[in-house]
Image 1 (cartoon, rainbow, N blue to C red):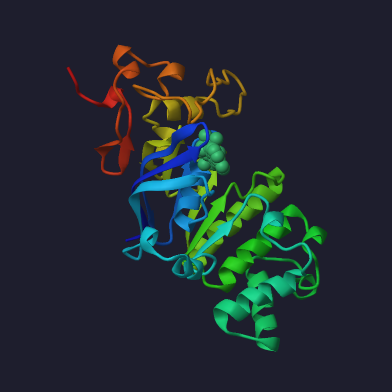
Image 2: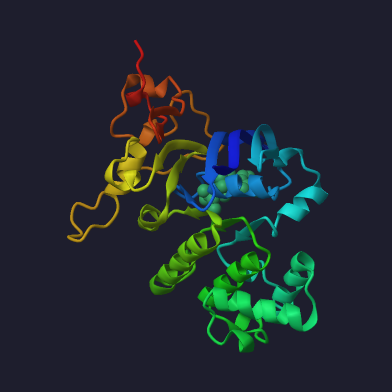
Amino acid sequence: MSLLKIENLNVYFNLQSGRFQALHNISLELEKGKILALVGESGSGKTMTAMSVLNLLPNTAQIDSGKILYNNENLLEYTPKQMQKIRGKEIALIPQDPMTSLNPLYTIGNQLIEVINLHKGLYGKDAEKYAIEALDAVKMPDAKERLNAYPHQLSGGMRQRVAIAAALACDAKIIIADEPTTALDVTVQAQIISLLNEIKNEFGTSIILISHDLALVCENADDTAVMYAGSIVEYCHGKDLFFNPKHPYSQALIDSLPNIEQENLKTIIGTPPSIRDNFLGCPFAPRCEKKFAECEKIKPTLKQIAEKTSVSCLLYENFD
Ligand SMILES: Nc1ncnc2c1ncn2[C@@H]1O[C@H](COP(=O)(O)OP(=O)(O)O)[C@@H](O)[C@H]1O
Ligand SMILES: [Mg+2]
């Protein structure tokens, strides 16, 4: 059952220099208790997609068309007040560095308890007990003592645990984790990802995992959307992205993963386009090893090619 469904989302930036499209017809489905990964190079539109769901787009951005269905209601029709009730409570954001979402002037306890007051209606000792339970659930060592710590006194990994504890404390149904491990070292990265997996299994939380780290995504996602230049170029299930990538961009990403021998490590030539670039054909064509003449002229659209696989590439389209 899908809990969150994005349908044909188009987002533009209205800048002094003009109007530029940042997201092109994005459609995604997050199922209950699953991890949906958004993967792609920097600038491909992953954060914009997440911010559209949370109604936290920059002022210069404008949703032109599309739907974001949560429990079959279109969040784009919600008032700011209605959205406030969803954000943080139903749908929680775990940012790259929670230093940006935690208040440096208040202790972890103050901040967690505030969330619990607001969302759980618990106060005093009850709220404190709940905060400790939430910190225990995210395996925070010495949970009780940590309540008195300030954000800067914690490591990056522990701050991520606090952010996840806050999401648990208000029974978030969806956690959007935007590059949650990018700022962490490799061992801590693995711990945070395994924590997200445990939370998914234990509480049935649905997770949107945003990452440019393909290895991490391939290991953990139930479904994956590969993004390029504000579009989804491939949508696939399970480990298909790793074992059977369809789009030349996905194939190039997989080929660039380091292997055990560290041999033949390929890089994708060129750089991703900017939203200011206007393409008649496929935005990946200039970097694509498999392009042919039509690729520069015809824009491919995302087409389903197998039960749980869609791809946006002319190689998979029949035309004369
Ligand atoms: N405030 C902004 N003003 C103009 N362009 C922006 C702004 N924020 C993001 N963009 C552009 O939108 C595109 C998508 O950005 P983003 O979603 O942040 O990418 P990702 O998260 O995949 O790295 C990029 O080309 C980026 O340059
Ligand atoms: Mg981003």
